[in-house]
Length: 162
Image (tube, rainbow, N blue to C red; front, side, top):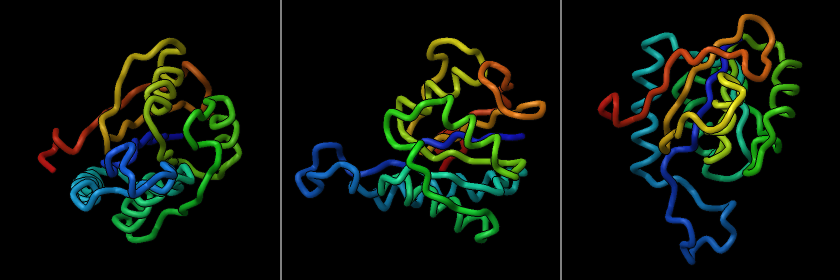
């Protein structure tokens, strides 16, 4: 199983009075475009999740939609409450292991995405910090379990000149 962990692309400023409900804060146009360019480059390098699970918050749903669209709609896209802020790794592992997908993407929030990567590859504390719109690929020999993943790559839009 190959897992891609995606932090949502850049969104509007936290605390913006236009979004008193932070769950409704959308991506910026620049963030959406930059993330789209990143995904376009990665799809040329065998980046192809078949299942995209996203936090229900607007900025994650929009990031997941960009990913879905850049994959030409070939991946199944679902909203997963377990990816909301404060998500627990054990429940995500359990849910993912019940899916019939070899390549899964989780679209979530910091610091959760950082903790999940650490828990999957090292069963320890924080060892990475994903920037906005960054993606990490973690490989598992069969089913997913904490501490058993191998971090294959981690990429940011800036790294690929997006």
